[in-house]
Amino acid sequence: MNGLNINQQRLLQSIKESSTIGATPNGGLHRLALSIDDKQMRNLLTNWFEEEGLSIRVDDFGNMYGRREGKYHHQLPVVIGSHLDTQPGGGRFDGILGVLAALEVVRSLNEANIQTDRPIEIINFTNEEGARFEPPMLGSGGVCGVFEKDFIYSRQDKDGIKFHDALSGIGYKGLKENRLQKAEYFIELHIEQGPILEKEQLEIGVVEGIQGISWISIIVEGEMNHAGPTPMENRKDAVVASAKMIESIDKLAQEYEGLKTTVGQLNVYPNVPNVISGKVEFIVDIRHEEDEQRERALEVMKQQLSTISGLCNVELTFHTSWENDSVTFSEKVIETINKCAEKRNLSTKRMFSGPGHDAKYMAEIAKTGMIFVPSHRGISHNEEEFTRDDDLVNGANLLLDVVCQLSGAKIPKTI
Image (cartoon, rainbow, N blue to C red; front, side):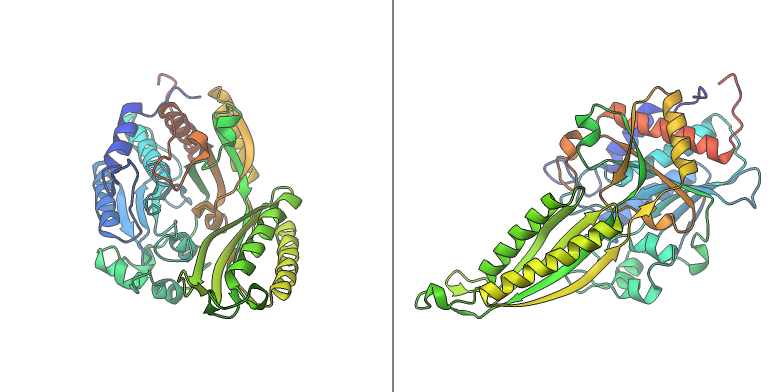
């Protein structure tokens, strides 16, 4: 677009170096939020920020910022970044690509001695994954006013450790006044985490928005009894009822175009081979880019599950444990991404994001957009997660172009 490119080898080397922190034997990562490995990765990022002469700060949620000043200090910044934490047994690219590509953008601007009108800030959001502290995206949610501080600090992991204590424990509890108050733009580069771009042999996903998500906690209560003497017709088996419910939830997704339903967590009580289960708890993840469709599907699901509970003679309880409406991104940012991709001759597709991202909450305080690059076989949250080097570089170069455009970069024609 402008003759300016990121340093391909430096970006790939940064990704390679980051992949050693929290590495698993099978080539993935286990770097949970606010863990020792997260601290080590944060320390490395801090060193890289210092090397680029960035102004570094940390807020009271542990979000990290590296600021490169612009010509006009008073102007709202262009913010770029993502997150460093991973799922347990996660991949090497989810989240961190957005942070390291943002770093590479700043490195490239510094190397070329290019000044921008607007300041540029790189951000690492805390606990995007929600793998250790639920719900996900606590760091961005805190900054954008979605979650109260007391709520965030009180979240506990499976060992009973509170968010606040873990944050203090790794030395990354900063100050409230360091929070990002507002930004003009936020751009997040991310792997697609789905199969569409690779399947259609496209290089870039131009993200229009993020699907709405509901997590519905369901409790099915039957009657615990001995597996041997209890006749089949007399049983109130919570597992059998739950299995039928889960099957109906799966079929529901086939009836609503664009609907996605998942049951990925299930707890059985007492979970003993020779005891009829008296209780099952599971969570339904249901997503759609149109909130009305998602809400309509939820009502149908509840009706169907209530019918099954009656037929199976069990009790049924619903509880919405987490919910996020869909969000539509800034058309200006979307068009900027499109035009920059076109000038680089990159093939594109406008698409909605299935997963949630920090960009969802950032859209509350900034004109927001996302760039997707292909995920091999659509695999993510898995040690086999993979994106080709060429795709990583394409995404980073496109991010560079978009940032230059939105920040008012003064690029000499000789570059």
